[in-house]
Length: 174
Length: 399
Image (cartoon, rainbow over all chains, first blue to last red; front, side):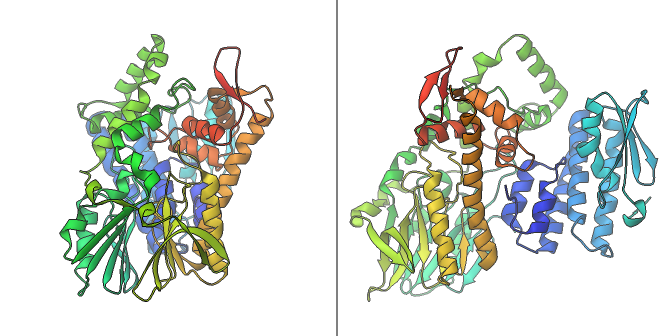
């Protein structure tokens, strides 16, 4: 099913993540083909909304609600950054926001999680077996939890996700 | 971009942007509508809902002087398209006309109409089984509907566990469709459909054959005094009974309203007709007779050229993908499947980006749809033979 007539946006929207499915459809309806600025505004706005929602939930000690909102924020900022040129300031800002939101979610995850390097995270209770997932090229480590670590954890294994080539990925605020 | 934002297609054709909701309960679903000036007439192609869109219609109308007549054309009977119909009485003009498709009239009693639609699955499937009732999302919904702000997802999860442990879901599932209708009605602004001014298009005369380029349609033509068409009202009836689209030949534009539904969300939907409409529109683009399209919801913003064509082709492709997915599962079960099992089989085997996966992810409690209801509508629309399974549940088979 096509989610957007723009092939780049369509591919990005098709990646499973924590983004609200309704937001995915809204993006398809509102953003024109090749409208990078509109795309960045839309997803940055969704990220900002999710951060505010996370603050609200944290104020009420609603841990699952805050976790979901922080993961949604990280995913939205990642989407905002993804199609932008590598030397673009907006890309760096959104990536930094993605990293910050995801790391804020780490202590709220239902499994133990830790930063395992400049572009890697380890999930699980340091069990006897750990699967190492090397992410596809261009996929930031923050996007690896929902897509890759959750299915591995469901098998009862720990999971280490790391970027394919950290040198090719932006490293904001690391 | 926000509700009421104006998109000037030509100096005489302005679209008033609607809003795609984030959730069923969070905000109303508002369509994009159009205001079109032609000679001494100002055409309103649907009126939307709520004060932002009403103000936008007034803002566009105020740009025009010398308007003698307001012509309000409703595309179908759903409340989100006719909630500001009272603008007909507010705009200055010597004459006023207002038309709606005759087959759309049952929808004007919108509470009863939608309640009947949503409840039509009772006896066919379990509304609750198989839904992703995310506690966080449900807690958000309940807070919006008046639950204490301190209600948490954990509270809702605990409640859900208790309900499941007591075996209550079968007793509660039958009330879910009524709940959805009540939420929908509660989230909408006040509706002003102006039923008293409505005249059926059919009262203008029987639908005539209308040829545009190499495409043939049926409908009604609103023309100037010289007989030159200003607006073609073309019968579509894919999204809902009586539904029409608006072709504006001078602007080379097609306003699709809601006639973009590739799936039978409603009991009176027929996506085969939606596909016919999309295919005709593609032909018009390929023939060089159509520059742009817009719809009430998809695409909510105007699209031109290749993007417009891609959007239309997407409707055709999505309808085909859905039909093929259902046929594949039913074909593998020649003795028939009940809707619950058809749904479970489809969702379990769905690829992440497939139409089934997307529709399953967007249904209640995200939006006001149920994939099982869409499947039931599809099976009934195609006249699949029915039967009964060992558990006594009604089933469908391909042939």
